[in-house]
Length: 485
Ligand code: NAD
Image 1: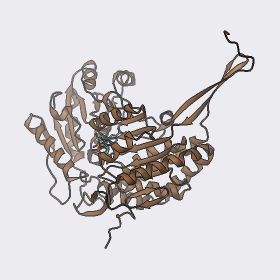
Image 2: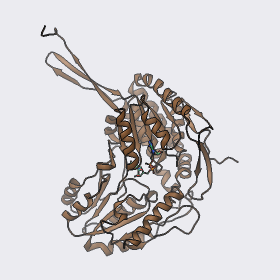
Image 3: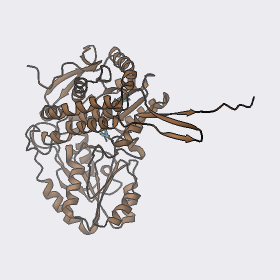
Image 4: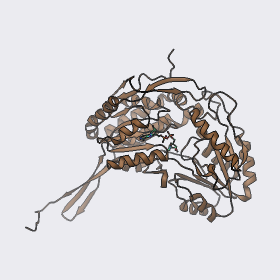
C-alpha cells in the first residue's frame, strides 16, 4: 500500500503535479523509524526547463494584477493552510522527524503567518513622489521577475513560505527547490497556493540535489536567488549568482552566542538555553550553541539545566507527548555523534546526554558539555544537532570579544536583569537577529537574517519586501528641455 506521505508526483509546475521518472530517484526516509515512506525523482533538464519557462511566462501578468488582488490570494492560501494544519503538520513530521508537538505550532502555522502578513502588505507597496521645483520624480516599486528559492531540510514548509510569500506579494514568480532530504512539504505549499487562486506557473516546485539548484541559479532568466543552507553552499551559490549579476538573499549557518550574566533569572536563562539548543533536536540555524555563563552562577546553572534536560521526552514523534525527535537523517546523526566524540576527546566535561539514544530511529540524546574553551571544535563549528557548549566568563568586555570571535553572525542572546547592560551588550555583538531575556523567537513581523558569513539580506518583515523588489525612478519635466547645442 502506498504510504500517505507519498506525493502525487515529484514536481508541481504550471498549476499541476508533474512526474518524470527519468530523474534520479530520491528516497524519503522517516527519521523516527528509518523506513522509506516515499520516493520522488530529481528534476531532469526537461523539468528544469519546463519550470523556468512557465514561471517566466506567468510573471508579467501576475505583476500587473493589483497588489490587493495578489494579497487576497496569499491570504486565502494562509486560511487553507490553517484549516489543514493537522495534516500538514503530520506531513512535516514525516518529512523531517520533528515531533508533532512542535510541527503543530511551528511549521504550517508559521508559513500561514508569512502568507497572511505579506498578503496584507501586497496592496500597500508604493513608490514616492519627490518634488523638484516645477518638475518631479516618482518612484515605482517593481518586481524583480523570476525568483529561485532553495531550501534547507529543517523547516521545509516554513522556508517554502518565507521565500514564496514576499516574492509573490511583490509580483515575482518563483521556482522553489526544497532540500533533497525533505522534498514533501513544499509541494503542498504549491498545491495550496494554486487552490487559493495563484495563476498557473507563479509558484513551482521541483526536486533535486545541488546540481538542480545549480542549474536554476545559473539560468539567465533568473533574476534573484534566495538560499537557506550552509555557509559552504552559500559561498558557491552567491558566486554563481554574481556571475549573472543576480540579486541574492543568503540565510546561512551560525554558531551563535547566548550570554548569561550572574544576575539573570536562572530558570528563564535555562529555558532560553533549552529553546536555543534542543528545539527541533538542535537543527536550527539561529541556535545559541555557545552558552557563556558568568562564573558566579555556573554550577547552579548547570545543575538546573541537567535537571530540566532530563525531562525531555524522546519517542514516537507522532505522539503529542513527545518533546524531542530524531536527527533528520542517519548521516546527520553520525555527524553529530562525531562532534560529541570530539568534545570528549578535547577535554570538555559531559554534563548529560552524549550518545545515540537506545531506540529505533536517528535519535541523539540532548547533550550538554561544560568547561568548553573557545578553541575546541564543538565551540567553533556549526554542529546542527542537540549539543550545547557551556563556556565560563568573568567580565562583560571579555565575553563580548569572545562571542564575536567567529566567522558567523546569525543570532545572539543575553540574559540579565540589568537592561542598560543588556542593550549595551547587544549593541556590541555582531549578529543579525538578537534576543534579550529570550531566545529563538522568529515572528514574521521581525526581520530575520545574519551578518558576516551567516548571510546577506533579510527574510520576514517589511525588510523582505526590499529584497524581492527594486525601485524604478522616473524624472518628469514640466517645461522645455535645455541643451548645450
Ligand atoms: P545545504 O547547504 O547542504 O543545502 C541547502 C540547499 O542547497 C539544498 O536544497 C541543496 O540541495 C542546495 N544546494 C547544495 N549545493 C548547491 C549548489 N551548488 N547550487 C545550488 N543549490 C545547492 O544545507 P542543509 O544541510 O540542507 O541545511 C543545513 C544548513 O542550513 C545549516 O548550515 C543551517 O544553519 C542552515 N540554515 C540556515 C537558516 C537561516 O535562515 N539562516 C535556516 C535553516 C538552515
